[in-house]
Amino acid sequence: MDGGEGSADLVINKRFVSEVEIEERRKRRQEEWEKVRKPDDPKECPEEVYDPRSLYERLQEQKDKKQQEFEEQFKFKRGFQPLLQK
Image 1 (cartoon, rainbow, N blue to C red):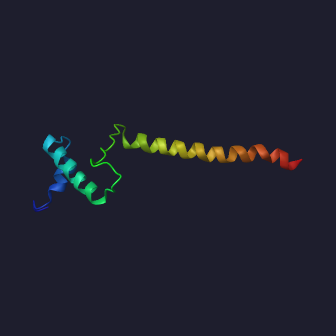
Image 2 (image 1 turned 90 degrees about the horizontal axis):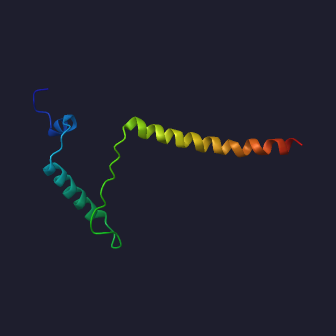
Image 3 (image 1 turned 135 degrees about the horizontal axis):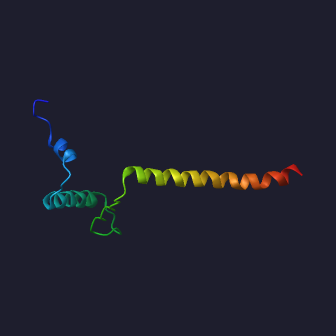
């Protein structure tokens, strides 16, 4: 806390992102893409998909999907139990 903290702390606390920062991030992503790109992949790095929902909403959606899958598994098992008891 002597004021020598890195600039990463500033970026985390800052809500406004300038166009210059966005362009720098795009360049870094493109450089990383060039390192891992295969010949049949596009030359341009795919853009990151922006999801405006809150973290809570995204996690809630995942939880609901898992719950539905879980219920689907047992839905079929419950349907066959009466047949097996006869």
